[in-house]
Length: 307
Image 1 (cartoon, helix red, strand yellow):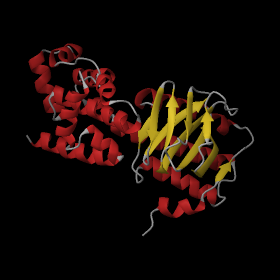
Image 2 (cartoon, one colour; image 1 turned 90 degrees about the vertical axis):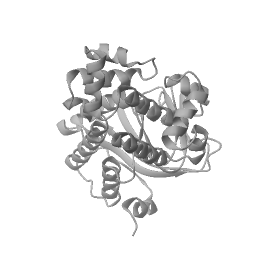
Image 3 (tube, one colour; image 1 turned 60 degrees about the horizontal axis):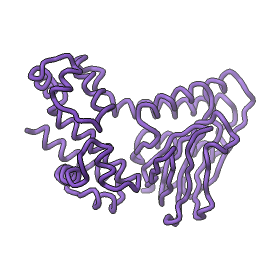
Image 4 (cartoon, one colour; image 1 turned 30 degrees about the vertical axis):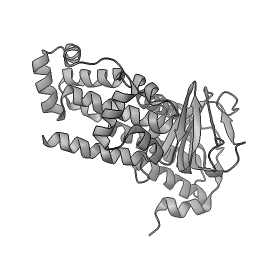
């Protein structure tokens, strides 16, 4: 049976909405939604040259791949990868020379609530995110596109409602990813937040215990009871997740990835990566499959939790 994404891709198109300004539109509103397939390397958008300012773009790759350069970093946009940017901005996304095609679905919003949502999400999670096709935000995106394709978005109240649902779906999805610290002991929450912000630094149990204002012994025991992992196991999981993103979505060398994720060199990072996933970073990059990493890491996590 076809999924929604299978059935809709046969009806590629773009839909723009220019509702008269109203209080609901100032809060959050739909500007455009579309499903595009590009095969020419002439396709390119520069965030500093766009004329449609104060707009908030979410773009999700369906097939092929594109690239986006954000300031000095280049990210490869494989299927299942999305980016979130606003206009104007220091970025450029395009179909690179080595890619035959790039198919994606996008939505553009505007309004104060959209700005608040994009700022919150990008400040917390960065501009590049991964989504399974069956995840809530992608299913919401497809639903909006289906309604646009069916000419059912015909007034600002429907547009605003759908824009709001999309932003709430994104917030719900990302909050589920980062949720745990809300119900943890305050010291453990502080340590987790510190790990996520400083995973590329030299992190030891003693240093993390100091951040938690606990003795090293009490901190280590409480961290294990709370999360199921030792503090250093948790650090490793965070580093590996960041390393996988860089390996898959950039062209950086493995030594560069290692330095950015807290490892002395690429050889040591390779050993940890291989131990946790069964794949070397090079094998993972060649497979070009973000979900494979998620599944392999999940199996390793389960083995750790059973100990």
